[in-house]
Length: 116
Image 1 (cartoon, helix red, strand yellow):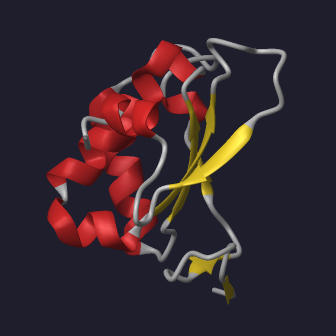
Image 2: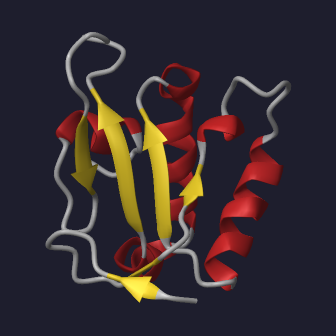
């Protein structure tokens, strides 16, 4: 799969990423076990770039991604690049911001993910 680098991230990311919105709402019933299995399979096939937002599932999506990261240990945390839209629940009319969680920024997001 074609790889690229996003911004200052030192981890290469594939041309394809995984949008995680549907794991927490919008497309019917959700199942955390199935979502975690999907995230694991994505990593197996080389997808290490995940997209989430604090709005998805009112924070559930970020918590789910955080659980996946924590359960995989420090190695998984170093391998993943997570893009998240922040402030969307608090200020939905403000332009979104992307936080790349490599050497980790975005305190509220990290707290939501249980990584801080």
